[in-house]
Length: 155
Image 1 (tube, rainbow, N blue to C red):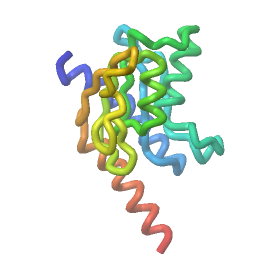
Image 2 (cartoon, rainbow, N blue to C red; image 1 turned 120 degrees about the horizontal axis):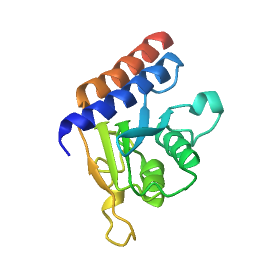
Image 3 (cartoon, rainbow, N blue to C red; image 1 turned 90 degrees about the vertical axis):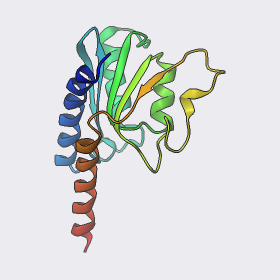
Image 4 (cartoon, one colour; image 1 turned 90 degrees about the horizontal axis):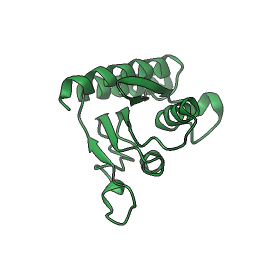
């Protein structure tokens, strides 16, 4: 798949990240795509829901699974603005998602390539491919701007 379709879906995830920022949540957005259609959307909602698992990816996969009536997302792609953490990468692995596409690297908790390479273990019964750096600059910028604003508010 060329970068252009990836950019289209990442733009949708980026719009959700901006929604999260407006709700004063960490600006991360995710979409699940099946057959050229978004079937799941999520944005960070940990504060709103008082739920440490309410990451954008988890919420997008939950919506997609509920909509499809199946926990297996084996013909879907997960697009997320920030490299998934171990929980989210693990959930995608367990949901049988074959492809994760992300924008910015997660320097603190990235579990696809930055901190650990969770998906690369050959022992898994399912393999997940990944593509990083799609719309990296705007994905990183929304995070940088949000946290700069939060630091300025604390002063």
